[in-house]
Length: 372
Image (tube, rainbow, N blue to C red; front, side):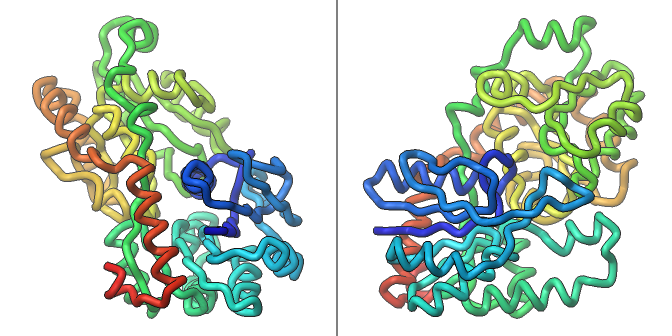
């Protein structure tokens, strides 16, 4: 097939949308499909041997690393020149609106992947009262797609309640080579916890919408060393708030693999996740997870089996959940083994082949019910 991916985010910006798009491009290219990526610039002109067409992008003034693509008719020209069999809309919002409009003009079937809780994002940045308008815009885009894929059952249910049609479930894959218990490093643990502390870590963007400031409720727990992996606009404030925590900054490759696998407890604080790849990566690394009982983590964390959930707005319950695991090494060890089992079979190859099935379904006119 020839697959065009119109994405709201791409390299060098690293986030869940970029990560999944990269994995999809790599998989498709490896199976002999042709791919064109249309994304807001600046960025690379190719990935995995496939071309990237950059459009104008504007950084948000309050979040410089978040670039919004400007809707433009240039998208139609790029897609028309490529001649795709199907168009993949990755987290469509602004540039994606141009993508779905172009698809209709060119009479090309579309698969829209809902991935970002834009309403939750806006609310965290003080844009309250805009929920109705944002949902109306998102529904307008997704109503024009032949199929919308949701990454988790809570998100699927929310989209259904909001009137989004033609829904199906498509989760995310995990690199089980990169995130694996064998990367646990005794040397790194000795460096981070020289007195044998229990390592409690957060991995992800340091931004308001991730609510990383909730970690302050864990800062004085005896026998615990907080480890914060990642970077973002809230980094400086968090460093002042958590002076005794270890801040590693942004890490990737082997360093990230060792950091995640060397934790004893993986804590996630964001309550607006449509999936939460970071939680899945922690589980794949054999680390029990403590996460909010909201959104994507509800599909990933089985309380008492591979981790614990806490009410999203109750920091005391967050602390209690972490304390339960910190105080019970045997329980942590049991959950660690079960964490790995809970994500078995979710490799990117399998997940991307499922996506190809959705592409084929919209190409040949099968309904969501028939494709399932």
